[in-house]
Length: 349
Image 1: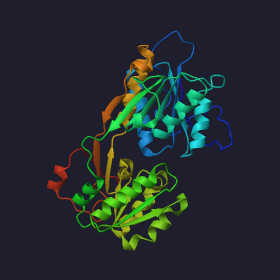
Image 2 (image 1 turned 90 degrees about the horizontal axis):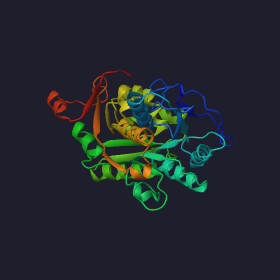
Image 3 (image 1 turned 135 degrees about the horizontal axis):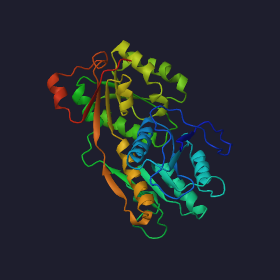
Image 4 (image 1 turned 90 degrees about the vertical axis):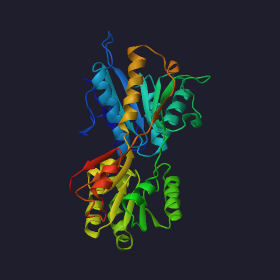
């Protein structure tokens, strides 16, 4: 059987070695292949990501589950996590594309950083390994070559767009009309976080909602730093920061005690007790990437023959019915019924 593995414990100066089995229960382990063939080994696919936040995990889950369903033999996946460090992502990419150490047949990249780095590594080593990217808006802006372009044509993938994007600020105000003071905790080292936090803050200020931005650099300080604001806020808005998401159970307990609403961009946080969430279903990106892998290896189609596929994000609203009242939000049955694409949770913190 193949193994879905996860290189997570490597020291920065260490070269990647033979991976160990990932123990995450929600990630499919032991997938085998896309096609039955005469090959003496499975097709080896490297998954390259900048981190292992919930959204990325959902993409990987969609990818592996879809491939397992439609082509369940002779394929193995190895997950290389960059731990939000571009240098580490590059080390992984150089290792993946080195045919003399651990050859891979294709790379699935999730997000901008992983895609740019994998493309750069393949170019430096003159390796025409297929690269299938996911979870990128406007991939033509990345400066990479992908299917349909001129020059190197080993890259194709899945592009996202938001044709009917609804501002999370609009949603929050619609569900909690009394919101006045918002706290935005975030990991200052997360890629692209400063721009997203600044844009969110401007949106709130434009609605006359007070905002406090709280950088948190260490996971053990998350709850203590948030607690210093808890008497002066009515809502906490969390983006997909791993350092914040990993502390969600403790944050939920605190907010339940003080009647503070948690509004998260991660539906997994709603399942853990955050009152409200607003997020696309990221597993769809993984499913589409799985389709491209199947096409490349089962139908023997080159990446340059596959155009970049534009997939619309479908946003879902998560409501935790067990904690929403304890976190200061009341939604009538009529309001609840009018919310499209909602996912209801009842799990206590």
